[in-house]
Amino acid sequence: MIDLHCHTTASDGVVTPSNVIRQASRKGIAVLAIADHDTVNGLDEAAGAAEKEGICLIPAIELSVAFPKGDFHLLGYGIQYKNENFRNKLAQLRTIREERIFRIIERLKRYGLNLTHEDLQNESQGDAPGKAHVARVLVRKRYASNFNVACKTYLNEGMPGYVPKEKLSLESACELINNAGGLSVLAHPKSLNGENHEEYERIIQMCVSHGLAGIEVYASLHDNQDVRLFLELARRHRLIATGGSDFHGDNGACLGYYGHRRPVPESCSQPLLQKISQNKT
Image (cartoon, rainbow, N blue to C red; front, top):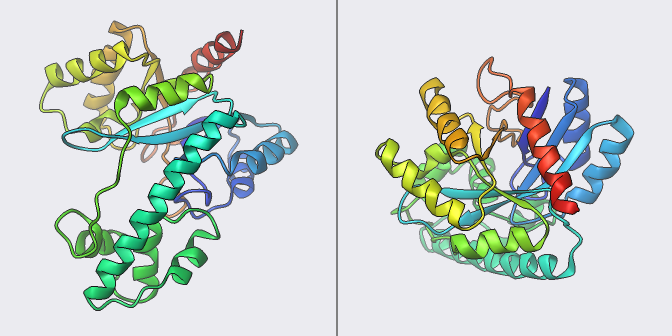
């Protein structure tokens, strides 16, 4: 089994990097990618655990990209995550992320909700807090019954705590990944809310012009028809087809599966690993 899209407590997951590795090992996963949002802070811990468990760990990251509609996320695989310039840019993104969370807290306070910076630091375990951490604090303080209700009631667009996230341009995101020796892969493209096949075709062509290497074909957002569509587009544009659970530890995702009883195809791992190896030479 494989899983090419997992999150940890280094960003908005609830399971530590080493425990994600241990859970993956128990499930028989041989190849795993940890792709936290805008950070690589969990990769050293994950690498140490992966070596002990005999798991092939692919260092990765997930970046948010500015786009007129939907959610545009770009995965970077095989990144040289200790590269100084790369880490400096991520430090800038962390500062922007923290400033956004401070603004969310202040907006919620004006609405009568008592959240503090300490609440968020405790929830994020010292790493940069994000929207997901705010939602979990809202649940813990009983302002919302569950995570989804917290987002819909307080944090999504048009709600009292909404503050838009500052995102990278597609060109900047691809450049950041490429300069770190990584491969850019379009994450769960269904989230782009394309109206039809032709619109997805245009988006992917645009991404290819910036160096896109792959498409996350097997994603929990995708039904079987979506999988067929994105697999066809990957083949047509000679892109790698990847897949992953988008595991966070509390979102219902199961390591190694991209939905209920749908294991991520093992065939996704070898082309990606081969391309990463070629990229290093």
